Length: 146
Image 1 (cartoon, rainbow, N blue to C red):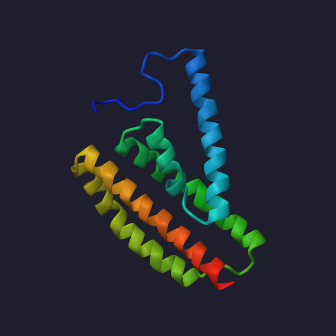
Image 2: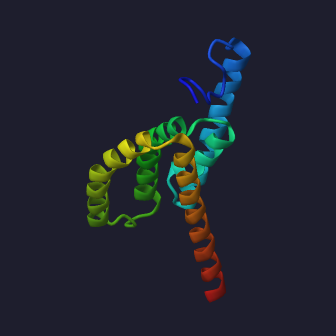
Image 3: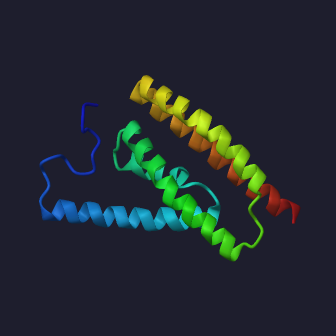
């Protein structure tokens, strides 16, 4: 795709109705992703990426949006866990994970920009499928154990 491709609304085709529908779609997706990520403990990108792909966004644009929404989701989820979850946060694990993220996110970002969009979308979809199957497997195993 070219510059600006994969937009929800074509550039210049705006007008009040398309702008309003884009905002409404954004709000609806935000509500769904916020609620879904809070009750499942998954990050926002796990839920929003498939939706953005279904809406036709190119992989790099979808990944950029998904990465950007992590900050408010993580902040709100952490505050919610602190208020409602008591002592559920392992600060040592938080620090260790954050160190790994700080080092590897720029590397992953550079890699994402260097591979063909089709390959990137395939890699993202396979990763999401593995995550989904892992979650379903854990739920099934827990159900069988109880």
